[in-house]
Length: 148
Ligand code: RB5
Image 1: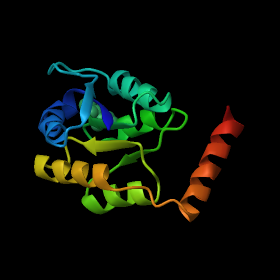
Image 2: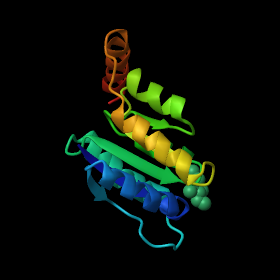
Image 3: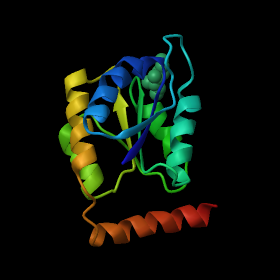
Image 4: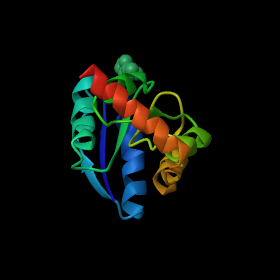
């Protein structure tokens, strides 16, 4: 699996904690930055990751900012992106089982590194359940098409 990852300055420390977890899982990582501590704008990095997930060139993405809210707003503007802001394991699991979330958003200033690592592992290993949930995703797709 390939995973695109991106963050702003408020998410960089957490990104640096998560990258080794992805490496351990033999995941191919595309790191879109930021990789410097200077203040930057989360939409710039959210856009890069969301773009490659939206166009299908990379299967999954992980975005991190201070609260996760900004990155989530950006990501969910992109067609086909289903971004889920998760602060604990249960939401991470459900975002895969029921929502087939293809971008995980984490709040770098709210949860600790170990919680983030656990969330990432759960999110990556959980498969979409399909069935009635696919019907609901189809409805989201129909809404996207209507709004085009
Ligand atoms: C940056 O200060 C902060 O606003 C950003 O990381 C994020 O929390 C926005 O939603």
